[in-house]
Length: 110
Length: 110
DNA sequence: ACCATTTATCGTAATATTGCAATATAGAAA
DNA sequence: TTTCTATATTGCAATATTACGATAAATGGT
Image (tube, rainbow over all chains, first blue to last red; front, side, top):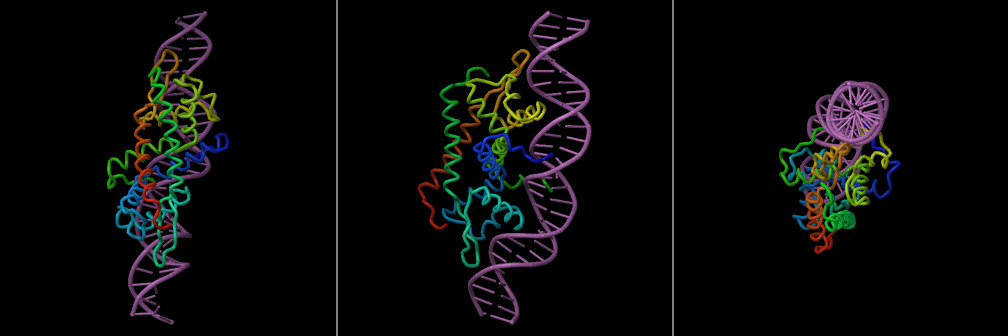
């Protein structure tokens, strides 16, 4: 089939899965890390930082944008992409809840 | 192509991407959340909790296990899966770093 | 207007993922 | 040993993803 069955899962589960999927590729992880490194936004230079062709990078940026992880502004000739903090915070909070839960319970069996 | 180019990314980037990919599906998110709910481990009952056929659930469990997010023990007739805390902690720490970074910088442009 | 630069889109090939029916396997129970 | 129950594996069809060359679109500078 190839298509994911989303109907019977909760909105939250689908939303988290979608956001994680956006980061589930080394190139997209690298893009986010590059955004950290440059302390601002990406304007063209990202293509030179990745071992991928320009259309491929553009596609990855689009996926990050669709998932709400980055925002894009037209900045004259170039385009300025930067992190959407809210999305990152949401993911961080999610892992905080999971992490706290399992830390306090300290694994009963396995 | 379909195959991800991993060669030119760092080990850390590939590792994070692999772990996130394991969680990048609502069924696998639901499995982890179910593990939280039952406060222990899964022994068979998970198939009844998901809107998917048994072989499909088995496949999702396998992917979570391959990525190191859950551990499996043979427990008599059934199999006992539970969370691998270390993997969850690793992901949590990763998002903490990113989250802290962008929070302090408060978005210069977009 | 023309050209250069930057980014997006299209088209396409290769591969991966998802999902399930059928079947296999392993252990428990009878 | 036969049977039941739980999980895994196989095989396959449908769809998604990844990557890139070619090309388009948008803007700035000349």
